[in-house]
Length: 90
Image 1 (cartoon, helix red, strand yellow):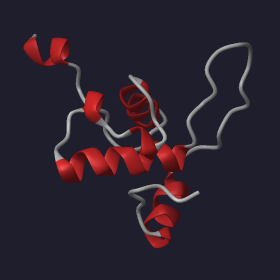
Image 2: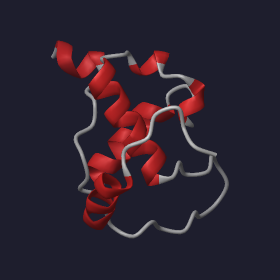
Image 3: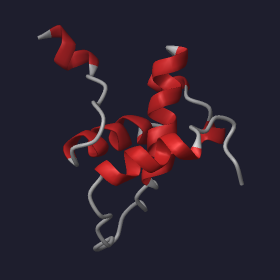
Image 4: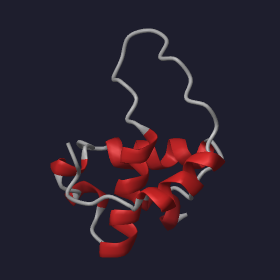
């Protein structure tokens, strides 16, 4: 099912080539959000200026998943993660 907002395939091909392989999930816990879903949401937030907590559920991320996914992509060497309010205050 297509998202309400999705980057073009050409853009995703360039970004996907820069990301490391997705590790297998080990142990219990929430399933990892697909990298493309995370990237689409990051671009949506950057383009619209919407707060992470207001990201529409239709994008595929729920609650704090957007911040966690952005942080994961940044840690994996991908795009920059949003900074938390606490980190900006210091």
